[in-house]
Image 1 (spheres, rainbow, N blue to C red):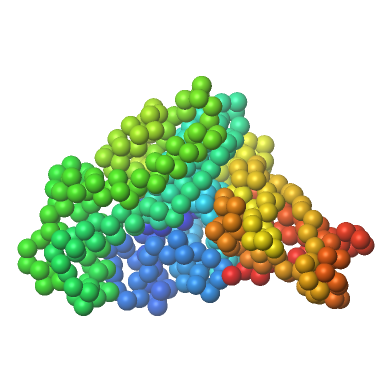
Image 2 (tube, rainbow, N blue to C red; image 1 turned 60 degrees about the vertical axis):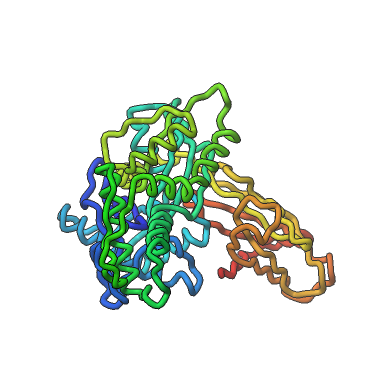
Length: 437
């Protein structure tokens, strides 16, 4: 059996085919004791929302370790449920995740002693579930706890083809922070009282009040005794909606841009809401009105859509039909030229797997050719996300402009990058080392 895992910022799930083997499992971890804990547990050893810091660099090691604990816990729960002994998994990741971040997820799976068989973008997974019986053109608005993705997927001819995808590190955690800051500002809470323990407790109370307000559609009162304030803070519907629109305006702008650039005016895709943050009726009403699209009325919790989709994807992968039925896309990949500009190797929203190449040469006498690799849309290289530095070894020092190399780049179905360098004069090839940050 091959398990499908939704490794979420706030909650995670595991399943296969039509079955989910857990409910929402908190992604919080007691890092000292190496165990998963509930979302309302707080303390100096409790880590959460680490997914947004996922990377293979030193700063991302905590995220990798915490993720491995959750992955191991999910598989253990699933094995107890199914009676199987399975360690093969496919994991969903934000569409915005770079190759470096995807590699970090792979390292987390390895640390958990799991066999990673594939990665799938979260909005693609959700669309797989939604479009099983409804063959249509959809735009997936995926707003979770840590990331936002928007993807356009066309399943009208029976294939699942991602037309375009984009995203941001922006989601429910940012909204919680903005609500907290408004409350702290209104009561003039001094910095000295904002201890880590007090802030962690207050964040939990704010998040709970936010969810209660979304459900009851009325004001909620939040205790502030941890700051030595006796009178609770009133979170009103008006305050909630104003801050929501301020925080999430960028998601509207990005959705409209993706639609404008990739969907003809004669087409009217349907809007699919995915992720826990879209449970809010105020947000749904605002987004659907702003983009002017009909909404797909899903009969399940939006928190479960990605998990449902990745469970189906796991079964498809197990049955060997993924390559025939699912087409996903990659982000724009470029290198920095000697003027600091982004020289494109692979265009944004190219269908993966894809292979492309570019010819480059050394601008100074050297033995090693170093090229900085980025993912992103800016024409200025450093304004994009740095992936790593390509290191090509000429084998000896060569004069400036005499070391011409064809750099071949391949992005596989999982969004992971492999590199090869070919000496133009000799035809000799070597795998290029990519020094990650």
